[in-house]
Length: 479
Ligand SMILES: [Zn+2]
Image (tube, rainbow, N blue to C red):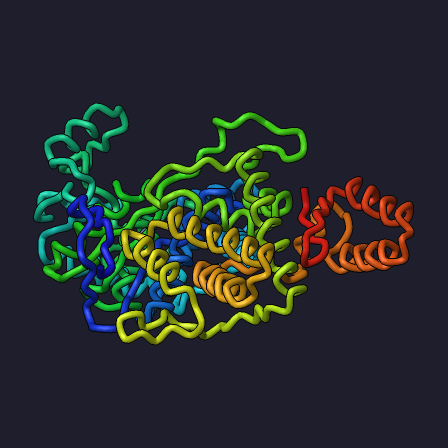
């Protein structure tokens, strides 16, 4: 089956056909940098990171653009409150965002336009909309887009213009200068103390919905393949982007992909891990791989829980992966990851020592609108199978399952078995220290010094390390 993507515009899964065969252009709305990233930022970024990695593995040449909104009402408000410049606020929180994304292993977009670097392109868009009669200038307030000028306004949001007008009219803050309550600002006239740029219709700053039009079209050109972002952006942000481009008569995104929100409130608090809203705290507590795994365990279009309980469970699942990798390495199975690995050509039977059935199941899941929960199940099944093969002293089967599991983990940006620093979460024993203690214990056991062996085991247990003895030696995981 070829890749099927759920398109928000049509509200159904459709076969994905890129603008240019073999190439995929993808624009994902990035952060508005006025505060530190929260869990939702992490989920959104990981969702598109995994989609990108999968498409690249599948052989597509992916060009990804993701913006930084560095001028916005909230940035202006914070700068004013803290008596600093907008540039200073946005620079601080761009760094804060990047730091957490780097920890999560989110690949940087190929193009990362900052809104303030694209003012002239935004002015071009607004000038064209004005000349087409799709926008109007309200002196002292700004330039508004007239939604009447947009064919099929509301289609992306799944609402009619009448429904949306009724919703907007029900709110109390309808601006009397707007021709329709749905009209939105393309350009905001300068207010005292705010940053401003010169335009033919006076000084001011851009509206958010115009920023992403100018940046996505500049980065990827008309009719690019995928436009993504959190599903809170469908209306009004993406609907309003869409309205401008269709009013200009240009093709816009071929597919709209939206990732759902994160729920932090519905889970009970656990003592060891708090409930977090800041991404850094969740990574500090559970590790970056646990956060990534947890995101993958929920389909991207479903609201996910990210509380202490689910993070703890993901963290121990990562621990099981590491335990398995160590066990496989001890059994002499080479688990060197091939970073450039590509999807095996199953039809032509080109499968380098991998479990064909598992790779087929994995790709079928991912091709079905990026169904990562079932894809992750395939990987954990492989790990169980590899462990069973090691138990049964079947090294060839164990090696194939283990290598396939590692290969597929790499596709979704996960690794296992390495001492990656994040394992020192509690200030406890490092992997190397645990291995060294287990070696001492093995030596004690062979010398029939069971008191020493048991003491080491108890010490490890006190440090949260669970040891299990099998035919291939001792294995361990963090409890
Ligand atoms: Zn955007």
